[in-house]
Every structure is written in C-alpha cells, then in structure tokens.
Length: 244
Length: 227
Image (tube, rainbow over all chains, first blue to last red; front, top):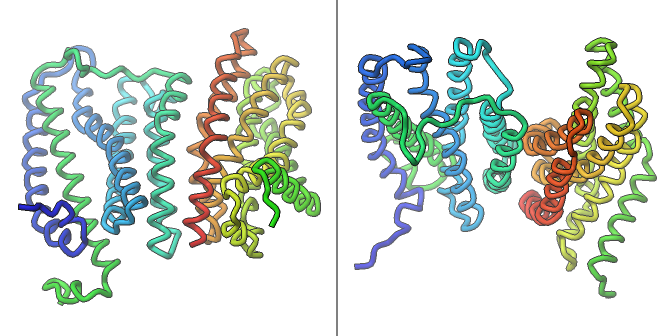
C-alpha cells in the first residue's frame, strides 16, 4: 500500500487534523503542568546553596530550551517553505514565531527574578543572558518583517530568508558573546550525569514536556487561524461548519 | 553584445556607483557628520573625565559607526529600485551576485571608509593612545565592510517597504553584534597590553565569510523583493 507522505502538507487536510490534535496537546500539557508544579513546589527539596529561590528554574530552564529550539524549528519550516514553495510550511513558521518570542521573554523575565536574589542584580551582561536577549531581537525582527510586508507570499519568503540568516548567525553570536563575558552557571545536567536531586529532575523534565505540549497546541491553534485568514476566499473554507 | 569578465563587471558597477555618489556629495557627508556628531555627543552626555572617556572610546566609536552605516544602507538599492535600474540588473545576463558585490564595495567606500579615515581625529578627542587608535582603525577597516555586506541583505529585504529604515536597523543590528564585540575587544586588548591578533583574526574570518556568502544571499533577497 502506498502511503501518501504529503497528505497533511496541504492546508485543506491539515486544518481539520490540527483541530483534532489541539485538545490532546492542550489537555496533556495542562495535566503535566499541574504535576510538574506539584513536584517542583512540594516534593522537591530546597537547594543546598540557593534555598527556595532555585525553584524558578522549573519554568526558566524549559522556556530557555524551548525558545532556542523553536527558532531552529521555525527556521526549518521557513526554509522548507522557501525551497519547496509549500504554503503550509511558511504558515507554520509564522505561527511558531510569537510562541518562540514569548518563551524567550519568559526566560529573560524569570532569569531576572532569579538573578536579583542570587547575583544581587536584575540584569548582568552575561553571555547567556545577552544571547537570549539577542534571540528575542531575532524573533521580533522576523515578526516585524513579516508584518510590514503586505503581500503574504513576499512576506513569507523574505522572513524565511531572514530566519535562515539568523539561524546561521546564532552560533557566531553565541560564541562571540561567550568569549566576551561569562558569569552564568554552567549546565547542571550533562551527558555524563548530574548532581541534581531526583525530584528536581522529575519536576524539570515534566515542566519541559508540559511547555513543549503547550507550544505545539498554541502553534497549531495559531496556524489554524492563519489558514482561515489566508484561504478565506477558497471554496473549502466557506463550506466549513464553523465558518457557516 | 560584448562579453564582460566578472572582474571588469565588478569594477564597472563600483565605478558607476562611485560616480553617482560623487554627484551627490551631500549624502556622503551627511553620514560622516552623523558619525562625528554622535561620537561628540557622548562626552557631553557622560561628562568630561578623561579616564572614563578613554575607556569608552572604542565602544562609542564602534556603535556610532554601526548607526551611521545603518543610516546610509537605505540608499543602497532604493534609487536604483525607484528608477527601474535594479530591475534591469536582475534581468541582466551577468551574475547578480557580482553586481551586488560591486554595490557593496562602493557603498563601503562611500560610507565606511570615510569613517575609518575620520577615526584618528575622534580618537584624539577621547585621548586614546596612538597604538589604540591604530588598532581601532584596523578593526574598523576590517569591520565596516562586514556592516555594509550584512546590511545589504537587510536593505534588499526591506526594499520599498513603509518605514523601511527603522525596520532595516531592527533586522540588521542584532546580526552585527559579533563584529561590534571583536572590534571593541581588539582595542581593549591593546590598551590592557594583550595580544590583538586573535580578535583581528576572528574579524578577518568574519569578513571572508561575509564576502563569500552575503552577495549571494542579497541577490536572493532582491529576487524575493522584486518578483
């Protein structure tokens, strides 16, 4: 039996699929958030050196990780859209961008809240903070460029090129900023093992999964809106039950 | 039709853009004056203590150079876009990347090189040592072409948009951060008695990387904007 790998690459088929998937992602995200916050705030012990303040990492670390990965995923979709001229890929890229920017912002915000009691300053010009800030600028640039071009096709392609340049530039920026200044603590979780308490790890990974599921659910919901907006003149949209 | 070699094509575009720039000297001078003015505003803003100014000088000059080059980037393609020359360039049988490279080179000669040449005067205002001024000039000499080249991508992407100038800065400035870091790092290294070659080598590497890829990327961006 031949499988049609590209069945869901068309907005017509993807729109209902996304609609069916969203509740699953949203509900499992909500459950994992509840579990992760419970483990993080109740089960996990206080840290030996950082006391109760460290608990902010349960939202800080997942949002940092996701903000970085989302940029690559966004650039990947944008590149697909640019190379193969698939409409849905470009729509996915512009659906992911606001979520990525949101996570970058949350990461900076929680980082500032953590930095005040631990470092004694809301903001320090450390390599990781600075590169996260630059990542936020890159997201905002993508969104701004997309928003200021009226023709959606040109907007998709121009923003895609910008996203690709950005993703090539991210390692260069990261290392240049890293050599410039470093204060941030290194990763506690390494491939060789970790010094973290098991409950802290569980809370962190549960929260990471919850944030991922949230990001997917929101991106799918947003891409559905984008599909509705862009394809509003097509026949299948006018025949949808929710449009009638 | 006469067949042009790539080098003569490049020289042709550079000469054409330089002639055009020389017919409108005011544009060139505005950028230079903007650079001088921004740099001169800093002592007025932060106070005249020489120790502090000496420390700040490389950063101030570099940021001012960044802003000045953003200011002139809008003009890189806009005149050719408005009078239809750019369309002819896209249709031309010659390589668009080489045409774009020519425009980048002439843009740098008009907007980057004057800043480099002006640097010693401004450096003396900030009481920089001769060594530091030399390294600063060298780092600007290596770095300003990168600003022109990376900026050209942004100029091509924002071609003909409303509020293109501000948007252009928003897109290009984050991408120019490594240049700023290595450029000022080199000067700080020489003033604290360290070896400057690592910073300048990295800057040179960035320059070669930009030289290899940005003309092609800008050409793609122009095709997207003009279709």
